[in-house]
Length: 127
Image (cartoon, rainbow, N blue to C red; front, side, top):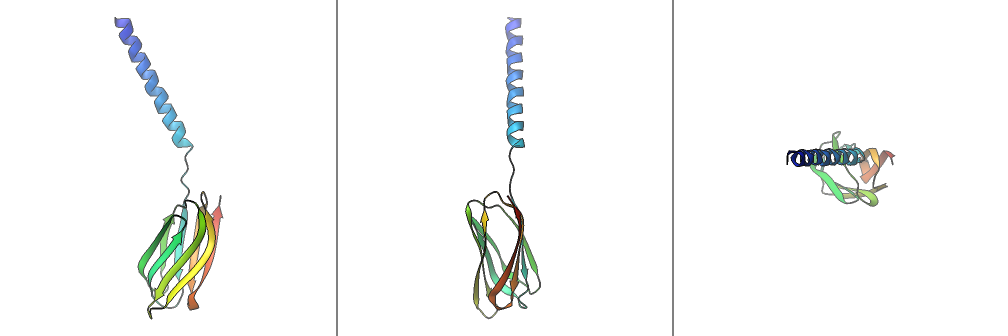
């Protein structure tokens, strides 16, 4: 009876060790891809209702002062363009399309909002 009990304990310990090994190996193979995004307001005026759309999600801010930066970390699911929209203090709506992003890209993306409803996109992305 004691031998069977010891044997069961050994089997349980072995199963636990194998489970722990499998979890460790599985998590070591996982990598979370992120893009550090910065929106720079260089329009010369404060803007409101900033929204940045990218494949599968969006982010934004209620206000962004002239000369201010807004930082946000994104994770892309799927493929599609970056789209930026905002309102100037006078109520003028601006909509600008940027580069296409794809899943598993990582790195950085700087979006510089310029006067006249223009923007400069500076991607530094790897795949």
